[in-house]
Each structure stands twice: as structure tokens, then as C-alpha cells.
Amino acid sequence: MYVNSGYLNNSRIPFKETKMDLRILSVGTYQIQSWPKLPTWRPKGRIDWQLIYVAAGEGHFQLDDKEIIVPAGNMVLYQPKQEQRYFFLGKDNSQYWFVHFTGGQVKNILKHYGIPLDVYVLHTGISYEYEDLFKKMRDELIECPLQYEEMLICLFRELMMTINRKMNQKNLKISGFAQAEVSYAKDYFREHYNESINIEEYAASRNMSTSWFNKCFRGVVGISPTKFILHARMRNAQILLETTDETVAKIAHIVGYENPMYFSRVFKNEKGVSPLKYRNVFKKKFLDTVKNDQE
Image (tube, rainbow, N blue to C red; front, side, top):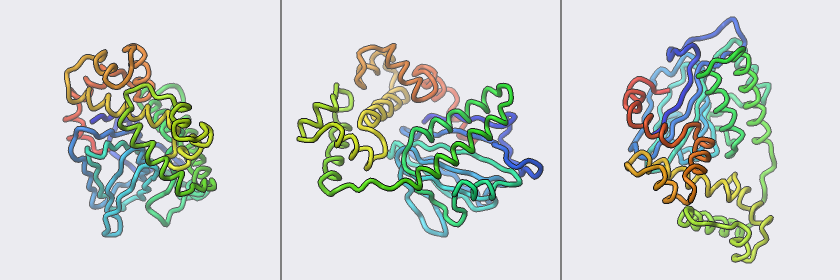
């Protein structure tokens, strides 16, 4: 498992802001592969708001006394003092991002951006724009550059606008044939992710044009075939870093990269840290982090 979070003033203690319209308290991510189960239960909720984005795998949420499985491409919005009970399983290769926020105008801000307050689950779709904005907010909290709190508010508002746009986009109509082809492609990519896959050649082998296949794949999965393969490589690289002592060069080769330096650059670009740092964080800090920090 990998955990990377940032906290306002390095404090994990939530509070209710009444003077300012909006303040961002914490942002971070959990990536669960080798850890069997990561549960969270706050019977009385928190004093602040929380938005959870399921970026990969799925989460199990207890909402209105019912367990709801929330797959990747959805967000869960918790209001203050609302019970929070959910868990993620390692076998699902799940990843989720979270942001905690507070302020005197939070409800009006969410309404302004079309975020409904009468539902728990927001069907937002999968987007790298979300992850990019979460990463930027997390880094602002960790590094605390000049005027970082103002930047956090700007990034949060951009996240809300992006969510609103994605939720209001017209869904691409996908035929049954296309659904079947995308399902076949996903299975093929998962099995052969560490091989050299040319999307044009793959589409041609299935008697499809590259543009049509890319459009259908993105419409069903939410990301391009190239990104899907990249995600598979990164997920398996994480598992190997967590569970083996293989060198970075060997892991790069196993997941499909001939050049270890290029693999390290790609990994850092996707995960925010180098492969070695990822392994060190997992081995040295994870147990203490999970014990003291459930977001």
C-alpha cells in the first residue's frame, strides 16, 4: 500500500471554519494492492466535509444502512457529522483520492458548481484531470509555497468545475458489439500489458479503425487504451516494489520497460515519487501511517 497526504499546518485535527468561505484541510491518496483491507469507520462523522474519488478498483460504502459498491469513476460526498463507514480491499487493486474541506459558504459553493447535496454518490467518470488536481492540491499542502492557501481554493474550484462539466457531458452511445470488443481488449491488455502493444496494429487485427476503437474504448472505460496499459504496468510495478526485493531494473523489465531510467521517470510522473522512494515509504512508514492516519 502507498499513502501520500498533505495537511493544513501539518495538523490532522479537523476543525470548522466560520470566518472564511472555504478552506482546504487535507488532500491525499491511498493505493491498496498488497494490504488485505483498509477500513474506515467514524460513527459520528467529521466536523468538516469530505470528497472521495475512486480512481481504480472499487470501494465498499455503508450508506443509509445499505452496503453500496462504488466502482472507479465515481465520487462519494460526506457532509459534516455524517457517519462514515467504508473499506477498500487489496485484491481490487484500488486507489482513491480524498479532500477534506470546510468554510462558511461550502454549501453555496457546491451548489454553484452543480454538485448535488441530496445524493451520496456522484457519477463523475474517470479522468486524469481529477487526479492532476488532487495531486496539485496535495503538493501545495506539503510544500506550502507562497500564497498556497489561495492556490488551494483555486484548484478546488477548478476541481468542482471539472466535475460539473464531466457529469453534464452527453454519454457516448456504445453498441453491444463495441462493448464486447472493449471487454475483449481490456482482458487482452491485462494479460499482455508487459509486451509491446501497438494500438493501430491491435485495432486492425480486430478489423476496426484506430480512431473508432479509441473512441469506443474511451467511451466505455473513461481513458484511452494507452493509458489503460500504462495503469496496468504501474499497478504491477507497485505490487513488485511492495512484495519483492527485486531491483528497479528487474522490475522495469518485468512490467515491460527495457530502459530502467525511463521506467523510473514514468513511475515518478504517475505516482509522484521514484520507485525507490515508493518502496522505502512503504517499508518504513506505512504501518505507522495507517495506525495514526485514517485520512
